Length: 286
Image 1 (cartoon, rainbow, N blue to C red):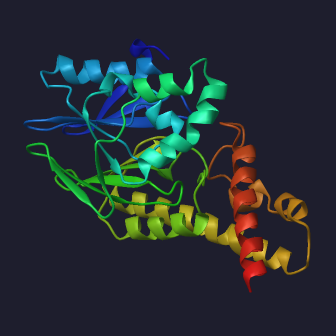
Image 2: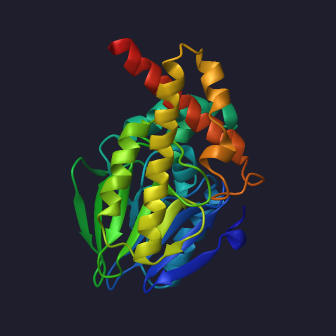
């Protein structure tokens, strides 16, 4: 993806959703009265560079950057923000470091090159962090489950949420290196909030408090139903592979998401595999 391909959409005053190349991915840019805050940077340096240009061309200093979590499709494009004040969860640096070997295998760069070129967190938190951009307030708080370091960012003046991969609207919930039970609790927490504009980690932006809350409820129910199904099948002493094969896409996703887009059945199977592993590990501990 080139800088020209990166799409910017103003979804609320001063709040921009920014497309990136992975599965309808969404970064974001916030333009306040005094400061700008780009959020996440996609996979490619051109994606982050386009965001930095967008901020700079509107008269803001490119000095701040935030991460929803440390996975590659959110941080690998961050070279343009190296040297900025970078806000993230306290676990994000270790999530990034843990992935460096995989990035080195996939991209033609050494581990040292990855470390040197990325925007590493400089300001971290565990409970909550509030930023005043002037006219826009950003409340960053943990919503783990997709990853241990997942955070969401709420802008109360716009009732807008930047969710990272804690919420997806274009693909099934992705657990990544996280925990489906933790993600489910994060979704329940988000359901209590007044969210009129939702920028997900992947998929289309969603508008309307009722619609957003209903979608969050479906994501949580999807995870809960798979877990219930897996527990029932594990009680019959089936092997893990057979349990996964029996928890089908059509039954649990239906027409919520298209089967012919983004390898959705494969994504569903990957989520099922993680939940089945969690269920079997729970059973072993009893």
